[in-house]
Length: 413
Image 1 (cartoon, rainbow, N blue to C red):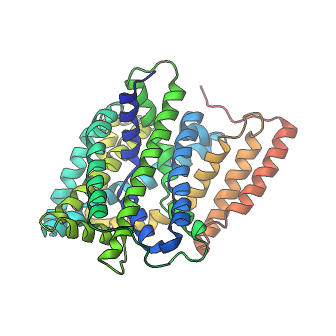
Image 2: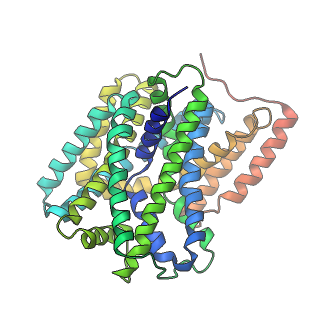
Image 3: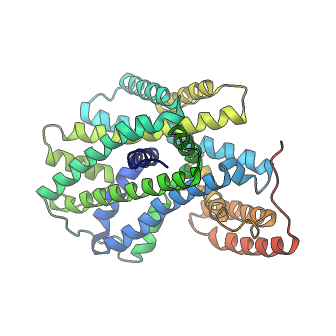
């Protein structure tokens, strides 16, 4: 059994990997916009932005990893789906975006916005992240004990400063119609559940590295839930910043704008530098977790390259995309992410069904329905169009499975 201190470190590690730039700005902007419907809107947001990712983390751990979970559909599907997920959430989208997003805040604070400055920043960013990611089992030492607590302290400084300088107030009412549903949709669009599926292996490694031999499942669950509670706490703090911002601004287009102005109002001499450091830490932590997860998986799935070599490849590709073709890559990978996200959520939910009930037919029909209907959802812009057909085909699969008794595809030995 781990001590409270070690469990706290693991919780900070989980928080660090999930908490990127998007997680910084979404709750601030939601609180600023939702007005008197803030409690309902925030509840919906927390349900999808925290609940889904933590459930995904637990589902992936329960199944033995994303590839093993997807293998319940078929071995071929498992390989293709897992590779697409890792590429979409890793070097093709999220990893290069961590550097480009944090650089934008640095450029605002320092004025260094030239192409050379951007390249040097991104190169240093990925170099340091890759160095930390080389030892995924030690991320709890680096992220959980140092970087993540530092980020939390800086957010606390902004929150306390906001509360002592101004009072929270209700402004615009942009969520007057169906605030709970709109908040849920905002959280859903973070698509962090996919991150939960890929981070499971890293969390497990860090729990093992702390000397856990018995009770592994229990400690992984505690780390995941505690990490989710920490994310909720920080979301509440950021929401308070959004509510307090009404005292000095009447409108805003993004959460980043609110955070930047808040920091400048509270700390005129260094507010822009403070918010830049906050974004750097948030993006760096997520980047390190993603680089570690991607290189870990690809070194096992495609052992032609070692983990360090895959890490180098992903860092170089991300550096190139962050400086040249990021927008085009986002235009390709973002729709792909929108298609695979419903499939990931479906697999996550199925993982919690009893094994004797949900077997081969259930997984095959549910995955097929989620894939095809999510294609239509992406093309039409109707985010939850995939939900009804997926539920229907899942129920059909459950009926067929319980009549036939057919099990899951087994991994080749």
